[in-house]
Image (tube, rainbow, N blue to C red; front, side):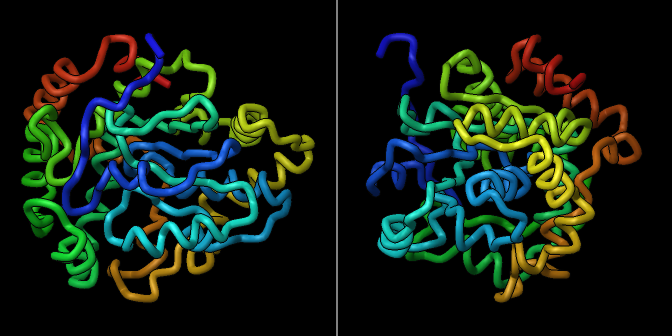
Length: 302
């Protein structure tokens, strides 16, 4: 196993429990969508489900592609649902590679994004949380450690802690969630591993049919060009926003505005009118700490 990815850390907090990957029966054809948060996870899951079923039917992601390391759902219920799935499984993961139980059998997709765009998307996500969402994350029966704090009222206060503080002792950014840059770097370092496919959010925006064809090839799924084009149209952000209630329903009311808040804009560059010179200096210091020059260049320039 020398040179192959190894699990060296445990991630457990108000949302994550990396050890859940050790507590269910995995299959040799499992697909893992292992994105950092707010990097197109739901987008990628929807694409993969269309590829598996070879149709254009919008499906509820929560009913077809389970987030394994999310501790808000009891493990017993998750295990039963995973065992009951008869189709090829699409498993969601928000773990850095150093906390993931990697296997050579899996086919893994990792989508990354400029951290400044991640921040803007995370602000939309976190700032729209309702009491229902906080209760779910801070359930004393599942949450581990300190509770998820309330989102600050001011975006700049959120930026300052997110870019300068980590939740776990080995992180220096990402608070009060977990790392974004460290997360990407761990997967970047393993990008040559045969079963890991690293994608950039911007490339998916620029050429979605081509990216879908590449994803299908990585997963060993035959997909005709016309089907790839049709899936691209079905998973454009305008289409996903239109179908938000089917793709990501929010019956409990975790978000102000419901599903259409969760599937927000899918655009980049909004940080340019929000972050100040001082904010960008904080970003530069964090990126220098956490990212290799090659990884940083890829994230910022693709």
